[in-house]
Structures are given as structure tokens and as C-alpha cells.
Image 1 (tube, rainbow, N blue to C red):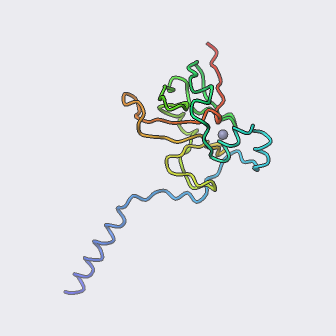
Image 2 (image 1 turned 180 degrees about the horizontal axis):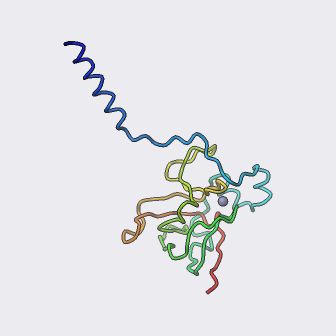
Image 3 (image 1 turned 90 degrees about the vertical axis):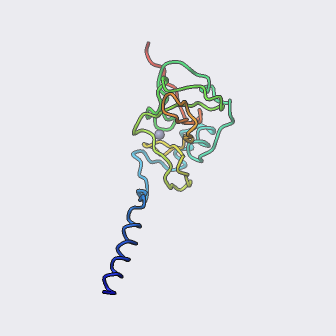
Length: 161
Ligand SMILES: [Zn+2]
């Protein structure tokens, strides 16, 4: 009789534990494009390197892309992967280029890399370069997300029309 009670108790504990959200533990994120820091330094200008490789933040209102509303696509300044579309850009008044969504699959979110990204961090799924952060105070009528991106991490590619 006693044994059964004990087993029931153990069973209860185990089921409670296993229901917990398991965050996928990616040991190490791998990127299609990898370069040494010396190679990145040679390729990128100082501002780009600071943001993309050192997870720095540019001064607000300093990027010419902040107020850019031309039609086109924003690419990664390090590897040219298309990241954001102009139709998803909006003026968040934060001083940084802001988008309500990314081009799915091309942007990765905060995993533990050597720089120590937090969960709301955004970086390139192709080369690992840092872009900015995502917040929940974006436009309510669309996604509610604000992808707050450093202009120095982006290259604007105007569309044909
Ligand atoms: Zn990239």
C-alpha cells in the first residue's frame, strides 16, 4: 500500500517537470559564411565592424537609412543577405531604422555566441553579424514588433521601379 502512494507522488513530480517549456539548446550556432575577425576587419569599414562584429550600437539619428523610405530591400552589410523589405519599414521615431518584420529565415535571434547575445538580439542567419534588437512596441495594426536595426549593419538596394 505504501509503495503505491510513493509511486504516485513520484509520478506527479515527474509530470510537472516535463511539462516545462524546453528551450532548444543549440550548442553552437553555425553560419554559412565564416571569416576570421581580421578578414572582417579588412572587409568592413570601422562603423560596420563595430556594429556587426562587436555588437555595437550606432548613435541614434546618425544613419542616413533612418529616414530612407525608398522602395527596395535592406541587405546585410557583411554578406549581402536580404533582410528587410522597404514596405515593412516605418518611422518608430527611435532614431534607428525600424521594421515590423524581417525576411523570414534570413535573420536569427539571440543565441549564445561569443559576444553573448541576449534573447531579443537579432543577427544575420548567414554570417552571424549583429543587427540590433526586437521589441514589442511596434505598430499594433501589423505585427506589434519593432525590429530596431543599426543602419551601419545594412546596405540599401533600391528596387528597379
Ligand atoms: Zn550577414
